[in-house]
Image 1 (spheres, protein in one colour):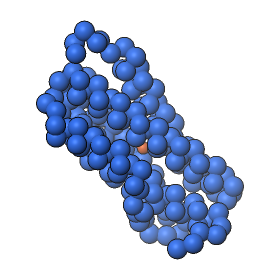
Image 2 (tube, rainbow, N blue to C red; image 1 turned 90 degrees about the horizontal axis):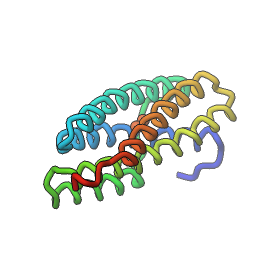
Image 3 (cartoon, rainbow, N blue to C red; image 1 turned 30 degrees about the vertical axis):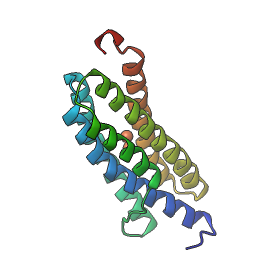
Image 4 (spheres, rainbow, N blue to C red; image 1 turned 180 degrees about the vertical axis):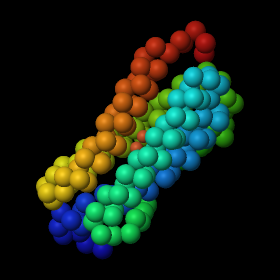
Length: 161
Ligand SMILES: [Fe+2]
Ligand SMILES: [Fe+2]
Protein backbone atom coordinates (compact mmCIF):
# COMPACT_ATOMS: atom_id res chain seq x y z
CA UNK A 1 0.00 0.00 0.00
CA UNK A 2 1.40 3.38 -0.97
CA UNK A 3 2.12 5.77 1.89
CA UNK A 4 1.42 9.30 0.80
CA UNK A 5 1.05 11.37 3.97
CA UNK A 6 2.54 11.85 7.43
CA UNK A 7 -0.38 10.15 9.20
CA UNK A 8 0.06 6.98 7.14
CA UNK A 9 3.84 7.08 7.63
CA UNK A 10 3.39 7.51 11.39
CA UNK A 11 1.04 4.51 11.52
CA UNK A 12 3.44 2.43 9.42
CA UNK A 13 6.35 3.21 11.74
CA UNK A 14 4.19 2.64 14.82
CA UNK A 15 3.17 -0.83 13.58
CA UNK A 16 6.81 -1.59 12.76
CA UNK A 17 8.07 -0.75 16.25
CA UNK A 18 5.08 -2.52 17.82
CA UNK A 19 6.18 -5.68 15.99
CA UNK A 20 9.81 -5.09 17.01
CA UNK A 21 8.96 -4.71 20.72
CA UNK A 22 7.08 -8.03 20.69
CA UNK A 23 10.01 -9.79 19.02
CA UNK A 24 12.41 -8.24 21.50
CA UNK A 25 10.39 -9.42 24.48
CA UNK A 26 10.94 -13.01 23.36
CA UNK A 27 14.55 -12.40 22.34
CA UNK A 28 15.55 -10.83 25.67
CA UNK A 29 13.89 -13.71 27.52
CA UNK A 30 16.05 -16.07 25.46
CA UNK A 31 19.17 -13.96 26.09
CA UNK A 32 18.44 -13.97 29.82
CA UNK A 33 18.16 -17.75 29.78
CA UNK A 34 21.50 -18.32 28.02
CA UNK A 35 23.59 -15.66 29.77
CA UNK A 36 26.14 -17.23 32.10
CA UNK A 37 26.65 -14.06 34.13
CA UNK A 38 23.90 -13.54 36.69
CA UNK A 39 24.06 -9.74 36.49
CA UNK A 40 23.55 -9.97 32.74
CA UNK A 41 20.64 -12.38 33.18
CA UNK A 42 19.04 -9.93 35.65
CA UNK A 43 19.67 -7.06 33.24
CA UNK A 44 17.87 -8.84 30.38
CA UNK A 45 15.02 -9.91 32.66
CA UNK A 46 14.49 -6.33 33.81
CA UNK A 47 14.49 -5.10 30.21
CA UNK A 48 11.85 -7.73 29.34
CA UNK A 49 9.63 -6.03 31.93
CA UNK A 50 10.46 -2.58 30.60
CA UNK A 51 9.71 -3.78 27.05
CA UNK A 52 6.25 -4.79 28.33
CA UNK A 53 5.78 -1.18 29.48
CA UNK A 54 6.82 0.02 26.01
CA UNK A 55 4.19 -2.20 24.41
CA UNK A 56 1.53 -0.79 26.78
CA UNK A 57 2.52 2.77 25.85
CA UNK A 58 2.34 1.88 22.16
CA UNK A 59 -1.20 0.55 22.69
CA UNK A 60 -2.07 3.96 24.18
CA UNK A 61 -0.56 5.67 21.14
CA UNK A 62 -2.64 3.43 18.84
CA UNK A 63 -5.73 4.42 20.85
CA UNK A 64 -4.92 8.06 20.22
CA UNK A 65 -4.84 7.41 16.47
CA UNK A 66 -8.25 5.67 16.69
CA UNK A 67 -6.84 2.44 15.27
CA UNK A 68 -6.58 -1.01 16.78
CA UNK A 69 -2.98 -2.05 17.53
CA UNK A 70 -1.51 -4.07 14.74
CA UNK A 71 1.90 -5.17 13.62
CA UNK A 72 3.88 -4.56 10.46
CA UNK A 73 6.60 -7.15 9.97
CA UNK A 74 9.92 -5.52 10.82
CA UNK A 75 12.59 -7.31 8.81
CA UNK A 76 15.33 -5.16 10.32
CA UNK A 77 14.81 -6.57 13.81
CA UNK A 78 14.08 -10.04 12.48
CA UNK A 79 17.42 -10.06 10.66
CA UNK A 80 19.36 -9.11 13.78
CA UNK A 81 17.53 -11.70 15.86
CA UNK A 82 17.98 -14.43 13.24
CA UNK A 83 21.74 -13.80 13.39
CA UNK A 84 21.60 -14.09 17.16
CA UNK A 85 19.59 -17.35 17.02
CA UNK A 86 22.09 -18.90 14.67
CA UNK A 87 24.98 -17.88 16.97
CA UNK A 88 23.06 -19.31 19.97
CA UNK A 89 22.48 -22.58 18.10
CA UNK A 90 26.21 -22.98 17.37
CA UNK A 91 27.67 -21.85 20.70
CA UNK A 92 27.50 -22.91 24.33
CA UNK A 93 26.74 -20.36 27.07
CA UNK A 94 29.88 -18.69 28.43
CA UNK A 95 31.80 -15.42 28.38
CA UNK A 96 31.98 -15.17 24.56
CA UNK A 97 28.25 -15.84 24.28
CA UNK A 98 27.57 -13.25 26.99
CA UNK A 99 29.57 -10.67 25.07
CA UNK A 100 27.67 -11.51 21.88
CA UNK A 101 24.35 -11.13 23.73
CA UNK A 102 25.40 -7.63 24.80
CA UNK A 103 26.52 -6.72 21.27
CA UNK A 104 23.25 -7.94 19.74
CA UNK A 105 21.18 -6.08 22.32
CA UNK A 106 23.17 -2.90 21.56
CA UNK A 107 22.26 -3.30 17.88
CA UNK A 108 18.58 -3.87 18.60
CA UNK A 109 18.41 -0.97 21.11
CA UNK A 110 20.02 1.32 18.52
CA UNK A 111 17.38 0.24 16.05
CA UNK A 112 14.68 1.10 18.60
CA UNK A 113 16.34 4.42 19.34
CA UNK A 114 16.21 5.43 15.65
CA UNK A 115 12.61 4.24 15.33
CA UNK A 116 11.51 6.23 18.39
CA UNK A 117 13.45 9.35 17.41
CA UNK A 118 11.54 9.51 14.13
CA UNK A 119 8.21 8.60 15.76
CA UNK A 120 8.63 11.40 18.32
CA UNK A 121 9.32 13.84 15.47
CA UNK A 122 6.33 12.60 13.45
CA UNK A 123 4.01 12.80 16.49
CA UNK A 124 5.18 16.37 17.07
CA UNK A 125 4.57 17.23 13.40
CA UNK A 126 1.05 15.81 13.72
CA UNK A 127 0.48 17.98 16.79
CA UNK A 128 -0.18 14.98 19.06
CA UNK A 129 1.64 15.95 22.26
CA UNK A 130 0.20 13.01 24.19
CA UNK A 131 1.63 10.51 21.71
CA UNK A 132 4.89 12.43 21.65
CA UNK A 133 5.25 12.13 25.45
CA UNK A 134 4.52 8.39 25.43
CA UNK A 135 7.00 7.74 22.61
CA UNK A 136 9.61 9.94 24.27
CA UNK A 137 9.34 7.86 27.44
CA UNK A 138 10.09 4.71 25.42
CA UNK A 139 12.96 6.50 23.69
CA UNK A 140 14.47 7.66 26.99
CA UNK A 141 14.28 4.20 28.57
CA UNK A 142 15.80 2.52 25.53
CA UNK A 143 18.59 5.12 25.46
CA UNK A 144 19.31 4.36 29.08
CA UNK A 145 19.38 0.63 28.29
CA UNK A 146 21.77 1.29 25.42
CA UNK A 147 24.05 3.31 27.71
CA UNK A 148 24.02 0.51 30.29
CA UNK A 149 24.85 -2.09 27.63
CA UNK A 150 27.65 0.08 26.25
CA UNK A 151 29.09 0.30 29.76
CA UNK A 152 28.97 -3.50 30.13
CA UNK A 153 30.79 -3.82 26.78
CA UNK A 154 33.38 -1.17 27.74
CA UNK A 155 34.18 -2.75 31.08
CA UNK A 156 34.08 -6.35 29.83
CA UNK A 157 36.82 -8.46 31.39
CA UNK A 158 38.53 -10.01 28.36
CA UNK A 159 40.59 -12.21 30.68
CA UNK A 160 37.47 -14.34 31.13
CA UNK A 161 37.33 -15.21 27.41
FE1 LIG B 1 11.63 -0.49 23.70
FE1 LIG C 1 14.53 -1.84 24.38
